[in-house]
Length: 265
Image (cartoon, rainbow, N blue to C red; front, side):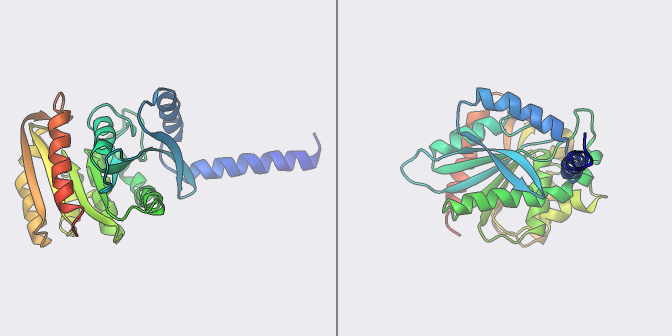
């Protein structure tokens, strides 16, 4: 092989390696999730968005109701994907029947055995991915955008909301919101709530993880300190962390709240 060909090959390899190195997410896992999701996708369209030099999967589902109320960006929890059968898939599919374009994003992930603490370095990539979703919806003329998140996705969403002042974001729905990591600034959910003033729905189940149920009063206190008069907390009796067999109830409560608070601000 000539020197010029060697140089070209090395340059391509270097650029590809540098691109992957820019993301701390497990991009191989993201690729595997995508390869599983795309062939079996029944609702919506798979597309690629780009943030911080990294392409990532997003699932867009157009509103099928007569009136479009806005757009909902949906964020999953740790280690999973934007079509996850618990919470995420029902919301992204069903909200599209009630006036909402939905955009479910692949958030940065790690291997299954990773702990919550291991996710802290990935939070630098969170605002960029969410903002890419916001810009996608805005380009489609969507003016009212809500963020709906579950589990660790709540900590990511609340971190974004403290970092990015985006007028298009009208409301925040946090499903099964936990404390995050109070000793890590990027993952301190309490500190985040103390800065969020847009309408916020904090919805969880009576059978959720103990730490989430037991910290409900502290979340209310943080929202009160923030002066958030449109913060509402709802506990669904019998629901677990994943709202198993209670997707219809979850969707109904969320869409009713969204219609009231995310379209009139």
